[in-house]
Length: 217
Length: 116
Image 1 (cartoon, each protein chain N blue to C red):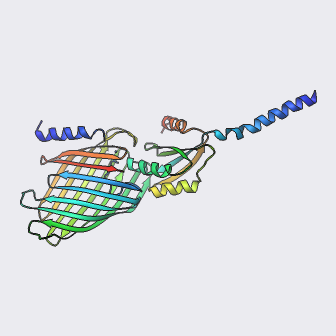
Image 2 (cartoon, helix red, strand yellow):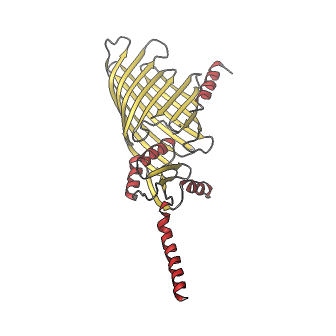
Image 3 (cartoon, rainbow over the protein chains, first blue to last red):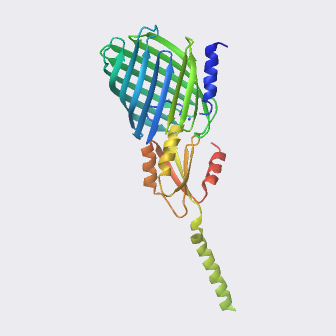
């Protein structure tokens, strides 16, 4: 077992005590959500509140790393998320979300920062046993641009109710294009959730480690 | 003799008609079938909305059966319109609302044992 695999295994074990198969920009009405994400090329931490089930707003701190270690771009944004459409079906649900944010961007050679913005769209479909999601996320400022497209397919390992620990296996494909990188990677993730806590961790085909968590209050 | 029998019958009739009134303490549960109920966030949002009613004693959500049940305080009720609004506000669609004179634990057992 390689060191990276050991780290992923330990991280997923730590995740065991931890609750939706899908990372959603809006959890539910009157929920405050703290979400964090780490990967080889970036980190993100956000706090959002949803007054209603169809919109939420909050702040997000994003760090995007140049894989060659030559630069780093940091964004501090105020962001709003909007549920465009929900399809409630017997035993299934589909959603269409959009989001947008504006704030400050900082990076090497940018004095005092510059106006930066973010926009994205997500489509998902989920049952108790299966879920699929595609999303596209754009980050821009006058001196920087980055786009990330993500597709996920997930399968539950056993039937679960919301107050029990759920375990999913997720296959993720990610395509990144921008000033720092132009690459596609796949990842195998293990996802655990129970009630309001949610965590996933896994490894990529390039040997990188990726992790994400979400807690609702 | 006839008078005595009449009195006994009258007493029996009183007891029989009084029984439903005395059962005002009977626990009542509202059972709803809900579409789109597939994840923990769904359940959490619905649980939060339904517990905000004064008449609510307990709430149970079953994702696999798409069932939401609300046990009521004795003698209390929540109007169908209010229930429907709470579920719509939470982001879900109610397909059926039924009231049963059973505690939530009994409804839960029945739902979990019912064939799919």
